[in-house]
Length: 172
Image 1 (cartoon, rainbow, N blue to C red):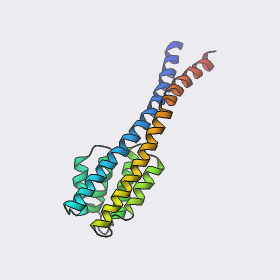
Image 2: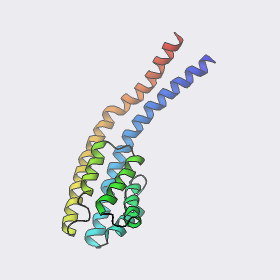
Image 3: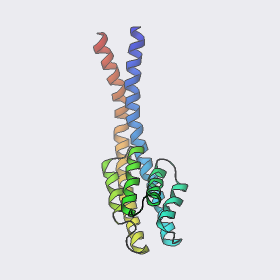
Image 4: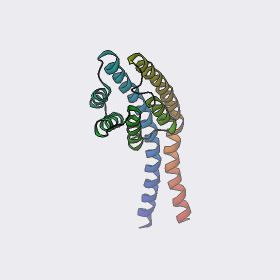
């Protein structure tokens, strides 16, 4: 019975370390997918002259979860709430994305800042803002890649070593 308990403690701490390491990978992937999705949004706005609600819907249809959550929630907010601005709808989408993906505060801040100017100005202004946010997300992705390379194995090892330490403390 003690061995089963020790094994469960070891596996629980090990899986916790693996989960933290996996979140580092997911963050990097989401940042990359956001860049692609914003490129799609730029295409919809600049070249197809699609109105923003339809553009958000089109991008949501072409992206994967959790990135889809951002565009779907923003689109839903624009359609369901009378008098809501594009900025407020985008903020609702960012909040939904924050709940669905392990993003850092700085990632969410970049997306929120972009939303402040969404729907304001002409197509040229929107394209410039989309290009800027994609550059910022690319920089964040590079930082996330470095974090992943530096921290993922540490968290994995820390989880299993933490479990082993608890076992030693409990059964020594």
